Amino acid sequence: MQMFVEVGCQNGEKLLHFYVNELKLFYLSGEYGMGCFKIVDRDKKFGLIIRESNSFKARENILFTIEVACLEDFISRFHVLNLKSQGAHIASEIFEWPGGKSVPVIDVAGNKFLVSEEHLFSS
Image 1 (cartoon, helix red, strand yellow):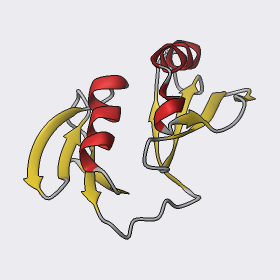
Image 2 (cartoon, helix red, strand yellow):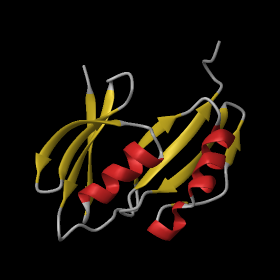
Image 3 (tube, helix red, strand yellow):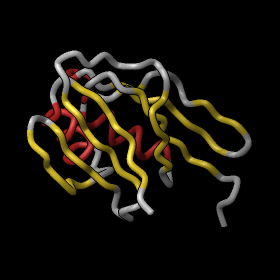
Image 4 (cartoon, rainbow, N blue to C red):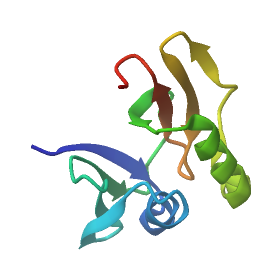
């Protein structure tokens, strides 16, 4: 089974480029035209449906969480890419708790997702 989250934007190609080429978290799985794309993770278990709309408005709540092996490596790579000029940014400081740490990220369309490094169930 695969799970997909629909992510809105005003420019589908810009959002596709952000997740696939810059962050390298997904790869393109399908292109449906009119700014609509399907992207999936390397394990093909989770994906995003990017849907372009002129009336799109970013939501405040977190749409999805991506778990990474090392949060600091992700943040370093994010800063090297210098995505702030495109509107993408890390929304706050790292939140640390005994089971791991996380940080909210705003993508180039204004959508919020969480990047997490958890230690609760690691071997």
